[in-house]
Length: 454
Ligand code: BES
Ligand code: MN
Ligand code: MN
Image 1 (spheres, rainbow, N blue to C red):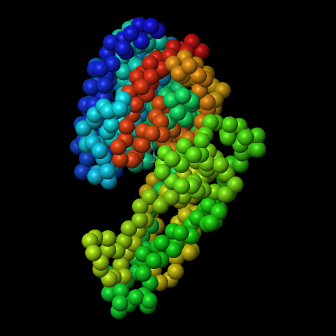
Image 2 (cartoon, helix red, strand yellow):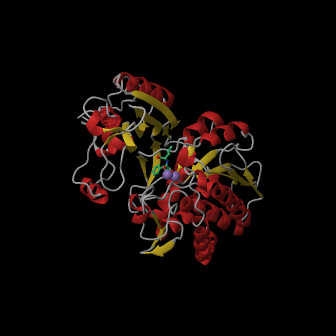
């Protein structure tokens, strides 16, 4: 193992400059103007994996963005680890809130600043470099396959089909993923739960064109007024989602499970300070840990309509829209929740407007068992490099394809992420600590070592 450590130490500056090249590619999956960047990024990664030691790497086309597949088979009888990550990143707006160019990474205050620095380019590149270090020191004890997608941030639509079409190619004993966060650098953790998601868009239409709000105000329904009323009614004053049947399939934890969950170190004051709010809010009767870990939620991600430019304009807008997502927990079904949402929204809409409800994407929640060998291997690896046994942790985020892997490929995942809340993923000024990046590269080879021994 020491050789690996020495190799990492000797090559750490190059690892970083390579990551910078990856971060410079603006691979924003949500925006079609970046289509070409998705291909560029996939090709860059395939080349990087070959240079790192893969026997072969391929950019495999899908109906959407390509999947990068690479492998190194050391021994057909050895265990196989399938590494999953995503090379697409979130949009960068509001751009004027960035202190540095999101696609011109810099190091400052011991951190890498740029879009994707953590989510997920920084994290997936740790795998490429841990793999390189094991190859270069002849200490790779498992077969390795890489599957890197470019649609995670938009729901992974193409990857479900890719998995179904490539079951044999993707055969593995475990899927290893670094796309989550730890409680803190001093309190390492391994994610054992992810929430699912149902993402909807609604459009409310009133008159067939914007109208003078003096001539018609008070007599014709205003779609922006109506939409905001409807949206506001989706969550009541106790933080309960009001959609009929929404909670029907929510798994209820026992009191002792809840007590266990709340033992994780958590400071409400620090939490509030970190997001700059005077108080938290959410479902009555649950702690903040529970609200994000084991309870579903509903959020408006964006809402628009009418005049929002300089000055004033007196109109009743013809249309108003909102993007609304719901985070789901076991055993909620994302398709069923989409149907319930649509039915509910149509039911509460007044006759004076027309509503159009669209399903944008969805994904199932995931729970990772903590008694399987791969979890133990991850636990050992983290304990060795962080000096503390990691805690199992329920995250509020989603990686929809993870439950898809289990359903389609029959393979479970280990969510060994090195992110931290201060990384500000999806926000302006995303960053990733150099210590997180290098600690990750150091930890991953230990996972392989222990997993091979188990
Ligand atoms: N890496 C995140 C998910 C995440 C982050 C999980 C931190 C746990 C801790 C992932 O890239 C992500 O943002 N997923 C989306 C999925 C959605 C667009 C379908 C999310 O959670 O919003
Ligand atoms: Mn991610
Ligand atoms: Mn993300």
